[in-house]
Figure 1 (spheres, rainbow, N blue to C red):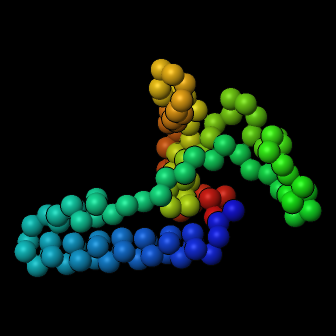
Figure 2: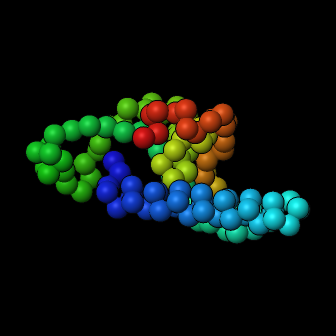
Length: 122
């Protein structure tokens, strides 16, 4: 669940990206050459991998203790969603990255054609 702070950060990143793109396009048009994308490529984004979600009443949430298991809506082996700044951009499979099994990663299996068309990412 996104907090108001997450939404504000996402909006700020989108605004920063829009300004950078506009400035790069204007500079390219004025100089008659291709835009320099370095400023745009340097903008940090938040990448999240969603294993699944669930919903529960606050009363049940307040009773959770260490060791409690929260059942998610995704099944084991189902694709996970990869979100960039809150928008789904890809889906993939969870993999073990380190030999000592201490870190996970995601192998991308599907790239979403247009993250703006995916209503579930909001």
